[in-house]
Image 1 (cartoon, rainbow, N blue to C red):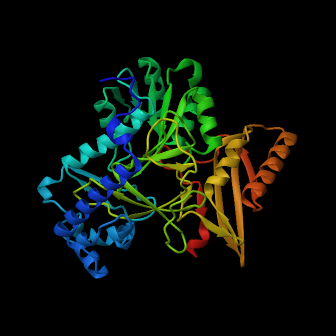
Image 2 (image 1 turned 180 degrees about the horizontal axis):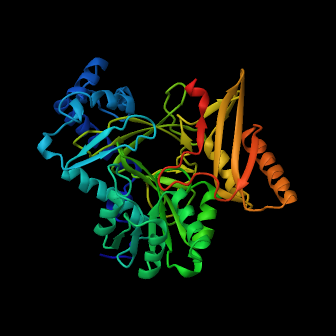
Image 3 (image 1 turned 180 degrees about the vertical axis):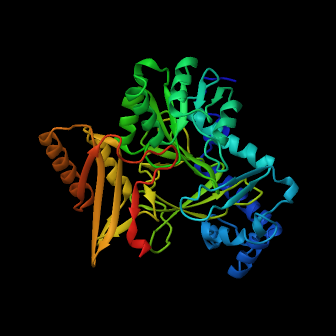
Length: 445
């Protein structure tokens, strides 16, 4: 294994654009035919649309294929065979891995994988870890309680696959995880941005350990929520740990499709040898192929066979970059990574609001802590938006100054006024996995 080569798979990662398109079309036709022949759900979907795998002759033809979304999968899994329903494309005895979605947006969706699928998962993660500079010399600590959702399961196996010494820290509490990383001189870790920041707070305030000087972490891979490509959040993590911070994007139903590389160009590479990514206008569904406009990501996992993910509406808001990365990969970039979710972007007082914009503002003010909470609700017929945040200063004058700056920056970045309340550090909820900081209560009325 030549550790100086920046690519896990030099052939695939440097294919020409035309070669990639040929590969993607071939793989798409193959997975669509596989699903059509083996899944009652997919066959019914495609027959209703009047389209067959043989009709797919160009990449443009793929746009005629019906999209799938999470709500459809929930309906499917109520049918036989239990618990996956008629989207399953292999006999039950070939399913070796069970996972489910985290359930943060409703009833979990069950996800079967064959052993071949699990090897595919591992290969996807190996590609991104190698791109971020992970090498056999690394001692990787994974401070995560493994559960029924996929989270860092695949990362664990990929870390082993590329030769890293891989240390699970699941059953330990936060303090014990920090002490174990110190004891064994771990060089890298993987967690959500929220938990990485929370670990730094615990290390400093409860254990008297400065991650920058008392730990050996040089690389951190974040996933599970936006943050590692939000400038102010990335800066906070890097300053707290003295380490390079990388973003990754994926989903239980889709796979590990996007990664930030060691060049840190400000975007996510799409793993285009294993996924076909399309971007559509949020309102019209028209394809977006050029940079400069945000849209919704529709993605196909080209090699996953137990429960195929074909033209899955991810609800992720993305934008193609108008520049290329200097790492040498030919995979396209998404500027700023996943900007938000279509489910989260909402109108408040007629203004489109993305929660990531609020996070960027809060995390850009050093006198504010890492945690905050946003609540949107109706008061009469008027939208009302409130923000709770933790202040790291205590004097009345300093609090007044922080509140004024926060109010001004929020107005500039989001075009909205907020009811702001500042609390002492440690008041707001803490999260180890996906944080729930944005609550739109209007949808519940």
